[in-house]
Each structure stands twice: as C-alpha cells, then as structure tokens.
Length: 188
Image 1: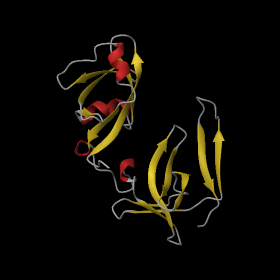
Image 2: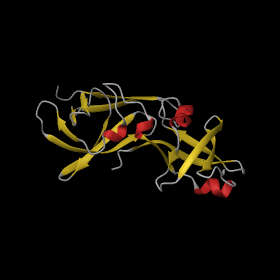
Image 3: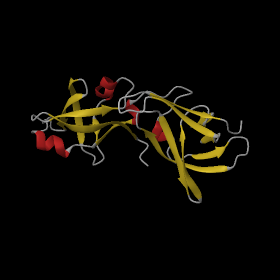
Image 4: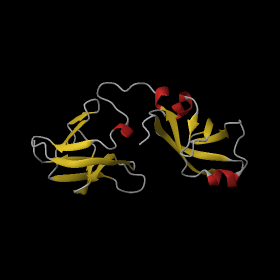
C-alpha cells in the first residue's frame, strides 16, 4: 500500500459541456483540497484544481491544459485524487488518516483474540465503518465508533475492538436523510 500519498478526493460526473467536473473532496473543509499542492491520480498523472462553484471544479493537467470538453470530463469519472503525505499536517495525538488503518491487526479488547486486519474503511455518508477480515477470519463490518474501537494506537500498530451485541441505526434512511449508528452491549 502506498503510504506516501493520501486519497483526498474523487472526480464525479461532468458538469456541463466545457470540461468541468464534480469533485468529492475528503478534506475537512472541501475547498481546502486546493491548499495541499499538486494532485496526482492512480496513474501518476499530475493535476491542479480550481473551484468554479459548490463542488464544481476545473481540472488542469501538468502542462496547465484544462479538460477539453464533456467527453474528456466523462473519462475522468471516478478518478482518485491524491496529495503527498508531506503536504498534510501531522495528525494530532488522537487523530489519524484512514489510510494508516488499512492492514492493521485488530484484536478483541480484554481477550487479545485476533479478529483480523482492517481491509477497507467505508464511508457512505451514514458514518464510517471498518471492514475486518483476512486469512482465517470471517468478514466483519463494524461502525467506527469509540464504543466498538476504544483503542486505536497507530504509532503502536494496535487496534482493540469490542464486538457489540447489537448495532442500531436511527434516523431517516431515505436518500437525503441523516442517520446515527450506535453499537450496544458487547464485552467491556
């Protein structure tokens, strides 16, 4: 896994016919995506970005040329945009980048029994969840909350999990609704 680059955005669908695209920024403040310097994609191409509206951006290649039109913008859909890790601030003591969790071993709190490795960090808008699994471990998806993961120590390479008895989702489950995920019970 490439730990030198951090995924900070994804190109969405085209906007209009002049080569503009929607960009889904993973920065705490979406507009800050432009503050971290050059962006690179999974193919190693270098891009710069200029916001043109709420979530709408103009992408320019390394030569400074914008996307030529809607077809060029369509070819960029789902392109991942990365920044150099050195361009980002160091996380505070109780913070980390999700990419640092991928591949870490997870153990059950109290018993130290292995539960697997972090395979994927999911964020579909209803809260972050971690998918655990790996050699000899059944796949398991847990909400990434303090109730389920009371210890996340990236420096020590340690994640401890409490398996909940129940996972409850509350709120409006419609397309634009807000939900809250909580875990209850479990060994503590």
